[in-house]
Amino acid sequence: MDTTVLVVGGGATGVGVARDLALRGVDTTLVERGALAAGTTGRSHGVLHSGARYAESDPDDAAECLAENRILREIASGCIEETGGYFLGLDGDDPAYFDRKRAACEDLGMAVETLDGDELRDRVPEANPAVERALAVPDGVVSPARLVVANAAAARAAGATVHTHAPVESIAVEDGGVGRVAVGGRLDATVEADLVVNATGAWAGACAALAGVDVPMAPTSGVMVAVDGGDGPDAVLNRCRPPADGDIVVPRAGEAVLGTTSVAVDDPDDVEASAAEVDRVVAECAAMWPGGAEAAVWRTYWGVRPLYAPEKRGDGRSISRGFAVLDHAADGVEGFVTAVGGKLTTYRKMAEATADLVCDRLGVSAPCRTAERPLPGTDDPERLDALVDEFGVDAPADGPADGADGR
Picture (tube, rainbow, N blue to C red):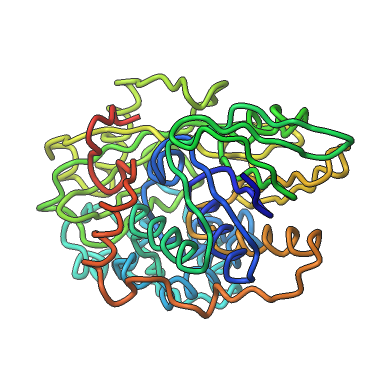
């Protein structure tokens, strides 16, 4: 079969690229080895970041988060819960860090409000009485499953073709460019494309290797612990300290997701399910929400961060959460592009940058329209849930999947 662009990967970035290209009139086919959202996207904590988490450490990335946060509230409201968020400073936490974060958020033009402990507990009664100060920020919660299927449906409506359970088995490089791509599973076909986009997240290195290209990755795994949230907070809680284990609590449909850890992994398909990580996350999150220590654990799942590391240094928490779009013509392979890094909040911007590069290589001048065009189901969550059933997803962030092991 022939297509102009073959997108490999059915997470948020992959479906975002497929949607963007299809809206620009580019013949696009997407293949995903499993169900949609089965990689990092469906195993995130689902926070719609305001940028506050990265404001003082990576202001450029934080500004991108803030801008995309505002766009997604407009185009994908059916996928988002307007919870708000708080960064909590507890007794013993560095007050200077709190002040730096507040100043960095203000420098970004973010709507940030400083609360004392009593004011915070008026809004979030479940918060620890030891909280001395808090920052109110425009965090939210996003449904990865709804977001991915909304993009997949929009891509399909614009003319793209989406194939799940269709793993790429080989990529032939002929005369310095990508040639035939063998796809197995339900598709079981050889695809000839003018250009291939590698949007496989934490698996980007392995996909690139099929084309003889090196994409240096430093993936890290993190555990999410979903507990009974009936008596929990209804806003996102973040510990106001440098990123560490157990520093976020995310409310989701009657539960609370506690996260997370950062453990280097060699193979994103081989993540150790550590009971010690679960215990550590629960104990640390209880410093913000004491009730979490006694809440029933409903399930646990592990996600793998797609960290791009051209210069491997430090631990996983020190690697930028920004994204990169790589044109492998520079590596001697024409027609092969990798999109890597990033986070769920910035998936649309990452897809736009990727589609811009692809269109430049193809000589397509049509502009990006994804920031202004609402996604399907914006005002109809029931339609989104019907799309989830139609496409099929593997997204523990939205609840346990049939047959899923939580990893």
